[in-house]
Length: 290
Image (cartoon, rainbow, N blue to C red; front, side, top):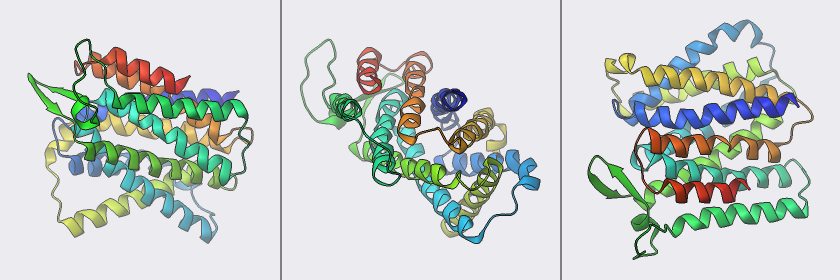
């Protein structure tokens, strides 16, 4: 089915985006990357302006709510990616399966079979296994913030539980966004959703800049990872919106397919950032994906 291929494309680009975010944050602050990333993404969707009109008033409100959820989700996720190993973030991001499935079942009335219920239990198991990081040596503590270790140059730093919580909040907010995508795409086009969604995002970040008196260095223009991020984001979201507009697509299945990108993120953590315990993280991810 075409919608499965579109969602798979989104998942692959999503996995690559997490790596690009980490690289972009090496050169600029979280808010500098977020603001530049959002404004540049909006520029990329401007060609869709001729196809973006004709919406009923109520849809502007729903799109504004979706954009606000993503606005908050991005702040949480970028802070998490900056302070956590990207391979760990990739696994934590799988928790959105739980949130999105809940929305699909309880809000959209999608059926949940016995096998799917077992699948969700397995998702929980895979996420809980992260608490018990098992290296080749002895495990000295059960605390998540002490067990999951980030390699930063030659110095090891403990990953604060606070940033793990931020990652989970981001997953919840992204699940809200995914739920609204499915609802909105029943009545509007992908061009309408993508243009107005990005316009609201620009407004939110502009208001944030004014309220927080945030300054953005011109070095963001030379940060090639921000350009790559924006391009992958626009292509991935376009594919996802089109998939949501296909009546046969199901949010519970789409959410699972999206998470295929986590394997790319985990491997990228090893190949690009030389992060440790990749085999165990791949094991945890495989439990969730299974």
